[in-house]
Image (cartoon, rainbow, N blue to C red):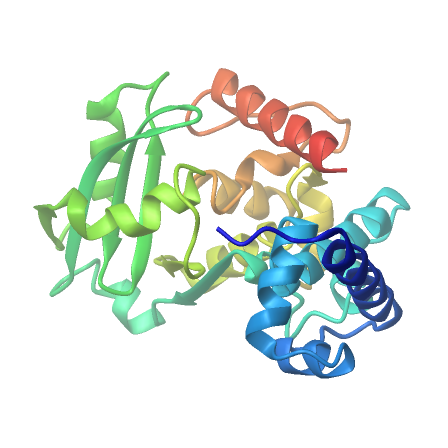
Length: 285
């Protein structure tokens, strides 16, 4: 194990202080090579020193900055889309791109109700009780948190969405995605999601994924953000039909009055998730 001398520590402290100043001064993320060059260090050496001193990699640190900026904007009553635009995130402003990547089933595939599709499934522990998790080769497509409703209900609920699919119990096919998603392992890459739903539903679910952890939105705000401000009731129905609970955060959708509203997997689970996210946000912020 290499022990740093006091001279090395002082030098590295000054390097890291300058590196943080450079990162803070740039709105766009800088690559590892760019940062290392500015510090006159090799990328590998800079990565090691930065991670040792800051606690996370340069890339991860810049992601924290982006999330922190988004939280500040939302606390100042910016809309979801304004926040996404102001933070410089790509395309539709999907804040969850920092943690998730997803693709949607085509309307034609959706109309076939899973015909020709193989869905792997398994039981896993989550921070909110037992979970029934399903996924295809493209990513996770279903998470049912069944502490309140029971496993049989969760099984019927998820499989009825894709009645013609072939179901194979294979938790080992999903474990590498599920454990990081539930915080039980460090992610090596973003967790892939495969959204199986009607086009309107998918728009609503994508809007939910723009809401940062520790914050909430309303059905009316979602409706406005997807260009259908009068479709509040339809948005509520789509929120309730979200198949990938927790990762597509339908628990962050509240009534305009601030009430919890309903939750597909039971209000105690919804309260638990919101409290867990709020606690983590406070600890990190």
